[in-house]
Image 1 (cartoon, rainbow, N blue to C red):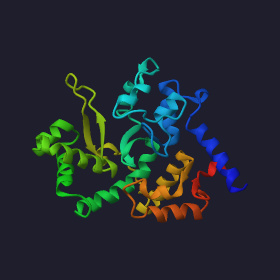
Image 2: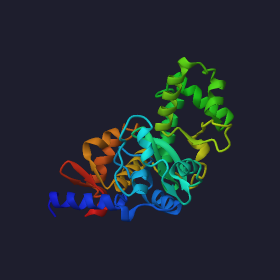
Image 3: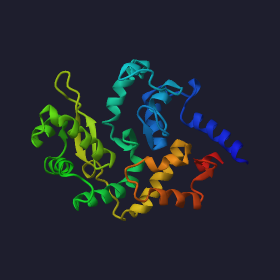
Length: 280
């Protein structure tokens, strides 16, 4: 099959796998959970190569039509299994088989439990670098220290403990949370019993969230990164190859992992694109 035909086939496969037609849309919370479990990694909203949960629920590609939260009105009140999508997004962040992260392009990404053992060696590699004070600022390491000592801690209480309650500290504090979350070092879920009108995450270390490690040992960091990249390409189906370098903050061996996948036939190269092997 020539490159042009292969890309046409890949685009059709992506539309099907990402549920971007009304006849394929996710209609129940059971559909949603199965979709996340099957894909492994799912973007909560839209705007990157991963399957979009919102797009799959609507059964069509969705892009923001306005600034801020205005465009969220396109889907905010859509009902799934008797509740608005917004309700299920909160519930999914607390699901025992889903972890909400920012590992992909620093954006909200749902990761199913089948990929946690793949992520673990990667996160542990960066936890070791952090422990050696090779990658984090003192500010970021203080957040890690508090969570290590106190366990899961809500955002407002974390700021109080760190003595960072002033407005001037708000932006640096949240930037640090995003960086730690993007490295997978911390994960958060919405407080299920907040005070009235308070929406805040409870934060914990990755190793506090993922505790079921195999006695057989873990793959190397390089092998785990290759496996995760393969799972990401399979979930995305079709991706511009040049974008891969920007996917993860774990990028010190990412390009080597990409070439290893192509060389071993675990990912396909078609012109400027990488394709999942299921397309062929």
